[in-house]
Image (cartoon, rainbow, N blue to C red; front, side):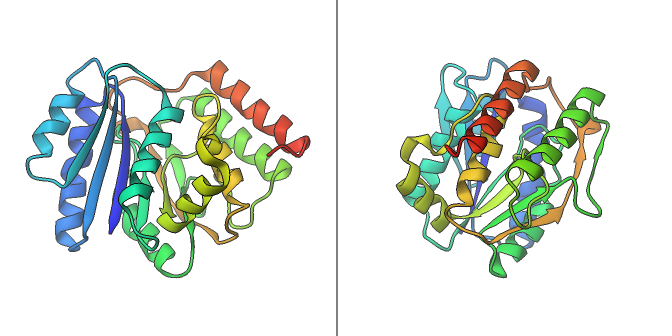
Length: 245
């Protein structure tokens, strides 16, 4: 079983386009799939879009009436996957804003089926890049990757902060067993780097596939809070250096 976990906050346009493409992929490649969408207190018509697609796609909705942020969204979403998934199932996470090509899902599945436990859709692998990203966003992504690669190198990993990843469900279950609710921590988007660093204590089988971030296709506003996110990365570096992470 493939689980696709999508965080959604004011994503009515991007999510609609993404679900259309996912629909074609799972039907065209006969993939047994469950899509779990966490609506994080959206104030637009995101919930309406999810409800409409749930009539024809295998969608489960987790609805937050208020905005809780990425950390809580993934904590709750991953817990649900672990609750209903089997050890060898796959969970893929990605953005809902139309910037990430869902066909990369096929490359991630192939890597996991060939003995990887965590597979990252990497902007920094040969063939990967960022198109149309604001300069600050690009500089922060590249800078974070280089710094974390030096501070806490993980074999097979060059992209620490992207949401677009695949996980073997068994690894997520083991990670929750080890860390409990502290598995998903961090300020803003830095929580994904925090999670990746923790998973290195669960498995050494990391891999990447190339991925082109199409920021020029982004629908809706940016969800990143720059100062909050930078503080989150600084905390990660501090905790790694102190041996707490």
